[in-house]
Image 1: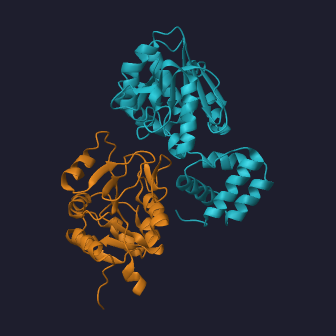
Image 2: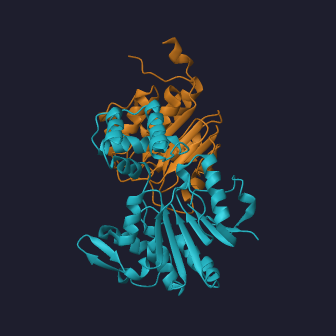
Length: 274
Length: 201
């Protein structure tokens, strides 16, 4: 990436400041990615150098929000990895359907594309009414987006293809209304969602779930933090509950591995033991 | 110059896009078991069955791995960037994956991988950029070169799609421009000598 230079010392200084002054702990994030995020922020903001970033963080209101927003990756899509959603549809939801209530946690949900995908799946399985979807992220800005239910219209063609590849049978456009360059998803989905800020690094378990999804979030953490977060998930899952990770993530090497068995051979879905 | 001849290459990163597959396979087939880490970043469609990994494994003496999160880096292994993730060299012992914004419309991006590899391996790295229709890779290759690594660019005249290697040459990222059909031999010779081959003036 072109742009102003960021040294390792700069990065350490920034992380110390974010932690000690604002309580955001990024010190256990994987360094190479984090460095790219900060460089990207400096380039997008057209900053002359690291000292300007540091100065603005200390002296400008709301700059913290911008920094935190850019340090975390908020790129996601609806029905990302359609085969994963097909496995949910065909193998996991029929089991969840046997429960009187269904509680699902999307941990690190970013702007909520996955949460809306799940709500659509639940409705098609006939269990949306008895379900609650908890959507959390450390970034307050993206939480607002979930409450609005608005996504770029330009993405809908790709999402519709993903939806069909996941086994969807309906006309995907029946789930939203197009307005200018946005697609607004029907309010009945939002009614079943609870969106809140939650920091996987520092916050604790807040409920018990039958399914936790945390896909492509752990890749940004170092191994120790991954282990702590997986322990948090283990503590937040009911017996026989499901844990879904990203397609290149694994809990094989974590200390909670023995509590789980792999539920799907091809997809990264594990089931907690009794 | 004496020090330059003592250099030992630890890793090789290869980036390719449209029209690069044949040369990627030739390189994979030619690489000797010499403890080298080989990292491949090839633009391709998201195929969950890892057909490319199987194809490469069938040709090579080295093990082939499509990288998973925090995978440990070892010699004599070809690591393939998984589709839809950026691949970063996090430290000299492990990789990291990143699902952030596409770079040059690409994820994995060659630039992202090359930049992180340059930071870790410095002058112990060989960078190779092949055929492609995209500007991805040129800036990353330049970073490898600036960090002291040795950079090989496919001769655009021999590339199925010359745009990508030409970008690298324009950005002064090439130590050596080599015909597509010769790159694998060039690399092997360089690894055997453990020193860059410099043309005699």
